[in-house]
Structures are given as structure tokens and as C-alpha cells.
Length: 66
Image (cartoon, rainbow, N blue to C red):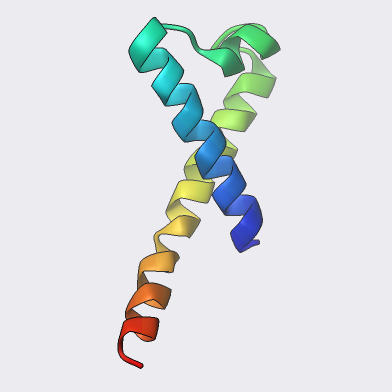
């Protein structure tokens, strides 16, 4: 689950990079626009992966205590 979340967060980050630099939303371009159901599902999965990734901070602090 952690690796899947990390992959989705990276995809989301790259998409935001393209939006920021070139005003190009690759997810919307591939799946038919921002309002398309598949795009909304991907945006939701990326957002959930970001929330899941917050748990990584707890794991980092566990390793720093060793």
C-alpha cells in the first residue's frame, strides 16, 4: 500500500508541475477533461494517497529515535 501511495503521489506531483509550468493537466488531457469521471477518480486516488502518505512522517520519527 505504501508503494502504491508513493507512486500516486509522484504522479500527482508531476501533474501539478506540468500545470504550474505549462498550464497543462496531463490527467485531464488523457481522460477527457477535469470533470470526466475517470479524471475525478484519479484526482481522488491521488488525494487519498497524499493523506495516506502523511503516515510516513510517523515512520520517519520512529527511525530517528533509534
